[in-house]
Image 1 (spheres, rainbow, N blue to C red):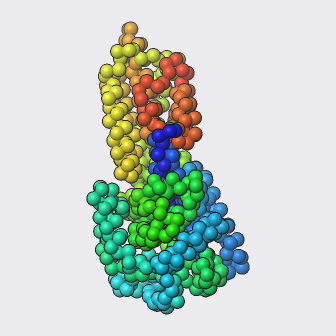
Image 2 (cartoon, rainbow, N blue to C red):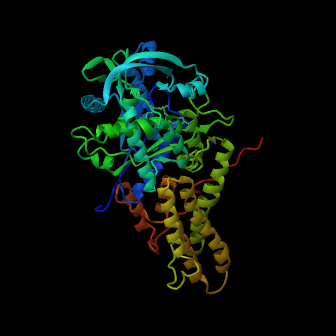
Image 3 (cartoon, protein in one colour):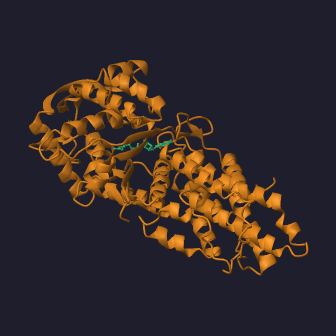
Length: 535
Ligand code: MSP
């Protein structure tokens, strides 16, 4: 499409040492919903997810297992790729930091930073969180009683001879970058409540080591000093750039990346990453490197008893458990629940199976699914399954102008990355259809003499409004929406959307797209009501 603008969305790249769990699936799912919305909107969208392989944990575990680090990483990277594929994530590429092209580009960037003097050799001593593979500041160490903020294990005092990044010299540039973004009304860190703590920390930030020794050859060597390996976090952050640093993909970087992450890794993304980019763009040949559009830092899924889901805590929803949900309720139901009820804001969300069932029944079975069945059934009963022709003057009681309200609200919520409200707007449209049926009573009208044309108009309007609602709901429940389009004889969206970049939903939410006379396929309920078995 001529006027399609590039849009770039990413997820963290996940440590390949862990098995995928609900937390990883969540961030990738959120990014997927956002990517689908942008494709629907006609944007030239690039969605990146993947795995972070060069952690010391990977080579340590591989040694214990008697495998090479690469073989162990291959095995686990495949597990992530499989889960994402099974969950129908629409990522355009999959990062593996052990890929040669990534390593080559990281080497080039670090060489440029060495040449410019922003990376230098020195000695470092500090408190190290081995689980997170990061040093924490003395303040943070004291605050947390010398234990890891993430897994509670004791911090370790470590001294290293390293290469350092001149982070401290980016205090002022970063602070003015933050101010500029605020002034433009597009704060860099969202939700905004998280930005303050970062800004305060930037004021005190010191240079950071960006290399380590003794990695046994696992990782990217520091150019010119093969004894030292580029610190896994620096290697990992660069993925966002290395995977689009090609002639045909650079436009995505230029558009300004939207990075979805959780609060555990905000500092890296909100301070170190933009500082590295500021440093890089001062180097010859990297003037094109701009800063991301946004870092969106969500909260955690926690267990009902309040713990963060993670492998070390042993309470995660693993791939099998995720599969069970998909088998029982369908993939769309899992997508919908995670995207609309997840911890996108500043509070954690407890994963509750009861809430899952309640949301499934209320929103999907009793609202969207039920409304689709009800309208199709009436068309079957009163019109032999053929979509009736609306009376030309018969539209006024169904407020067509509402459609443009829904659409603009929906777009506003998506632009704010408020997926809960965006999904709710799609449902609101469905509820309006239900209210319209209650008001016009087509089932009663059908019993009256000479009212079939009026009944036909009501049902046409319902089908058309549901079609529009389903366009809005598509990023959340794509399979059910596509099935509904097939049933109401509207294959064209499926074709339009399959060919990414040609979506432009504004075209599809125009009124009157459904062709009267088409045979409607009633089909089984899209979301059968779920009944808990009584004890
Ligand atoms: N490898 C680093 C990231 C490098 S990005 C340049 C890393 N990996 S991780 O495997 O630990 O993944 C952390 C991310 O997984 C979080 O930022 C979040 O996106 C997701 N989640 C992990 N547990 C989660 C929850 N319990 N709840 C929500 N998201 C969670 O850090």
